[in-house]
Image 1: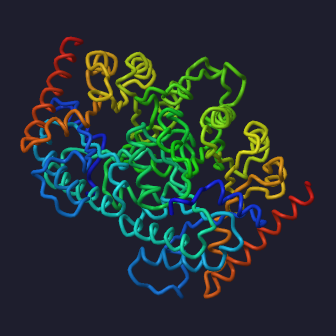
Image 2: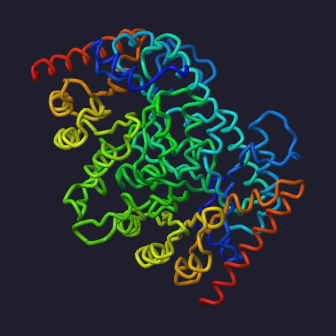
Image 3: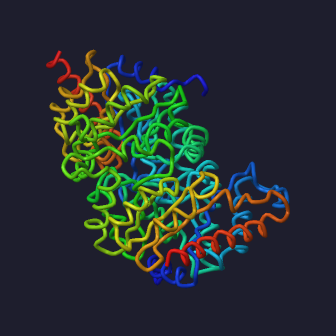
Length: 282
Length: 282
């Protein structure tokens, strides 16, 4: 596994013609009845396995959100670990982003580094910027792993702190985060930022600030982000650079026996819609 | 367990004359040899058990940092869950703060709420402010559970974003976080803020902003915070309001067979030093 490099895997997947990231955020209450009702949290794994098998050739990344697993305690953690293991086996070419939104002081982050990259074998992790680069260095030092820093989040109330204007530069806080990540944090070329699809204007600002750095874009689908505006504002100078995530819109597209086929259909539709807008914008 | 209320437990512990919080941040590499070398992560629990037994009558809270457990995958999670369970059994009067520094969008935070309060049965959790109140509402809605929001962290590079001056008010970012938590987030009276002991000046500013809201203060001991300045700048109008955390300085006070007695000695010394400074300042 030591030869996996997040940025390289991502480039290869973009080259294959997809910017879709499938959010592996299963919910026991929504898992179809055709997944056998055995030990609770193990069903998360069985569900994910079917989704991974049905979609992996169409995606640039998978992104499990840790909250959906922590919810089930250590059994949830085991399901998360098995999910990532399965993805690496079936589609070693697809990077797995751990959506953990972690961030602590330096020596504590070393524990999270071991947990996410050692125990879980993820290829990248999402991070809070609030403690600053010095604290996040243990993540940034992992040259083969992606550090994906929250910048402008997709939620309605994201602006409470992220939109505050900083006196010294007249930039908004999220723009300052984008600037610092692009110009200071990215020494190893392994940083990305997060901007919600629900804020296409802000996405455009961040794209101007970070150049061709990859942007993870959640908020398509259930959260209501506009895909056309997202693609046009989010693409980099090469018409790439986006990891466009959809979770519920894909994995819960059907709650019947056809849930995996439905997930594939939605992934394909999203991939093609993105590629269509990219062509228009080229 | 439904009758536990974090703020009430904390008040009672302060009334008993202690502001010391012991950070349960064990490290397999530092656990004394007298803890039997059985299954790795289970030793974390055995170590914590001895620390809890030796110190619980002297503390206002225990604070396990989740990173130290995630590091060991699901076995670490099991050790964390057992640790909290044991603390609730042996000293139900002492609240347990999950130092998790979580923060995601609203519906995802519901997963973390179940994980931290349902699965792990913690009494409070530490949170990142970056996504704003609207996202953190699932935590804030848990009336009996503490929401402890990062404000000015203890690390060297904390100022990168936290010290930026916000144009509209001339406040620094961390002061704006303190203000919003005190005036908007705290509808249920269950909020606290975090300020590092390494920044006594900033601690004083935050105390002015938040009134008598409890402040969790890490950074004493190994991180080098000044205890006298911390107590004088951190106390509320009643000479209380502080949760002063020490982790390594207490739990690793000795690496011999006497580690639990050494932890008790250090806890007692810290408690008495805090109370001495409180008396001087009264």
